[in-house]
Length: 170
Image 1 (tube, helix red, strand yellow):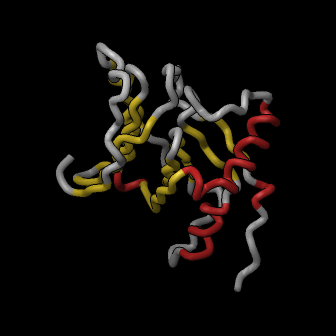
Image 2: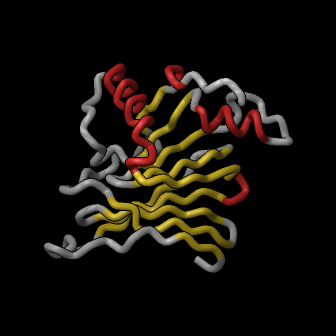
């Protein structure tokens, strides 16, 4: 069995496209869908009155993983430690939906497992973190982010649809 990765090196930093300020909804973002097809990989989160669409060019995506929040419980410790070091609030994310993770075990995994021998530091790890879900993406380039504002927040008692994985036409 290989040695366990020393996750104390992981650094989580809030990430957003240059020049864009992510809106902070009343309720945390909920994962709506994850899909790939054509020439893109797309992750959609819904907030109270805004939908955030994160789009990666399919040619830059190396690997993707999804986990429910309780299955990434250990990651939350490193997330909290990183945000405390930055002086940020450490409540569950509301506006902080997008993170770039440096020196992550996921980056180490692709470096160790891939036949292509990617150099350390050439693969970027983005973690898209909703209230109950983590979507991790290893990619060579950052995604595009689209904000779609809706006229009315979801109604009391109305639930977001559970995440849907798919491929093909988007």
